[in-house]
Image 1: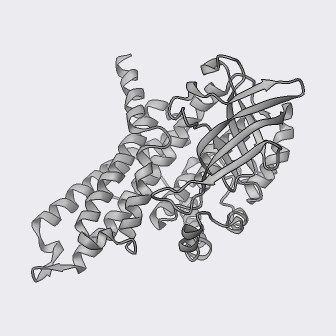
Image 2: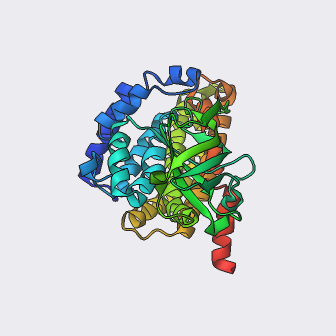
Image 3: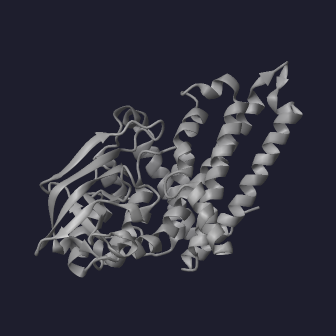
Length: 380
């Protein structure tokens, strides 16, 4: 069945994304994986191609559209290309809304032009060594000292952590912290006391820089408070639906792509004198995975449509996130099995997909947290 959620304009944008991947990303991705980080040049190239700040108003250099379908196209094409190093969705769909919705006019003029050009690479620092999905357990503190806050604490698993020029930090601004005592502070590259730890060695997504961040008495000007003091928790909750949908969109596209690769492989690979595709077990495996992908795609396309219209709620975003990411994990594992020994070789795309995709059920809220959100909505 043909998908009907995209217009001709979206498909033109898809061609732009594919051209960008072919010219600017894929020829360099293997080197970036070895180095553990992408180049800053590719961020600037993304800015020139109009791939950054899709929802940022045009007056600040952005795309000027709040139609999430453009972001969905970008996410799908990056997932199908296996280009896990360049975290454009983090920049656009996770950090971007905080800057466009919460920033003052002065802050927008300071940060958004660089955000859209690729000169300012962004990150958001929520997770701590002792606080992952439980955001109310955050211990990083920001003490009011008149014209600035003194920021102290440690963050970990921060995507874009090495390259980021601007980091939105979640910190306690009351002694008790929790849902009513946290604020968002923008920390900029070069602020004294702001240090980066090592580029963390992950099992997958090797080109995506993920780091520990340390804040030791960082003097953050009051002008860098994002939104209102002590309202961070509500801001975080409001933006998590888009983050989770974005992860789900990438997961479904990755599952479909891996299945396509495997169908081609089993048609060509022979065992016992005939193609693997002639074996009933292989056909049944393919049939099951294709059906699961199709059903998931139908639900996700509805979620994309609802979100573009401003109607997607946290519960359905959680459904999309846990289901699509678990599907990706399941499909990639089964497809690797169908590749046999070759599936275990890193030179084959299926092996990279296996390693890159494992994080999907963890970040953005674990599968278990997603089920808890859904369960509470049903049972209280």
